Length: 158
Figure 1 (cartoon, rainbow, N blue to C red):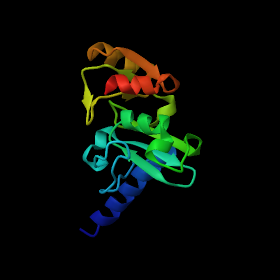
Figure 2 (cartoon, rainbow, N blue to C red; figure 1 turned 45 degrees about the vertical axis):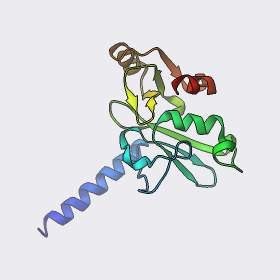
Figure 3 (cartoon, rainbow, N blue to C red; figure 1 turned 60 degrees about the vertical axis):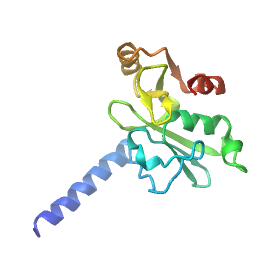
Figure 4 (cartoon, rainbow, N blue to C red; figure 1 turned 30 degrees about the horizontal axis):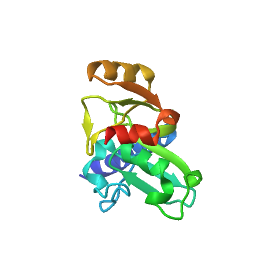
């Protein structure tokens, strides 16, 4: 047992180090964190977690990319006193690998037969190839980049 403890500690340290080096540090959602858009408890849906970090260090958690975009596109509605320009990082979980990726570089498939916690969802991918494959396999309608997603896009999913 005494030999096992250092091995476990080393193993955990190496996993965290590799994750940090790759820019994919795991997001630990506080158990009581609620989505500022829909009010759902985010920790219940770990595979769909999205985040927004503001320059003051505040982090908001979402139960899916759709709600993250709702907040991003209408920041002052969901967080009075904050502006979109104050957001310094946005992340989503890649659908296949569950790796945390930068939302601004992701490819999103809309209109598929895969649903998130809030129903129709923007399904995120790291590569266009994976997005195309998913779109074909799951009857997706569009592959969108970050700047192509508008309030109308989000409304069409609701």
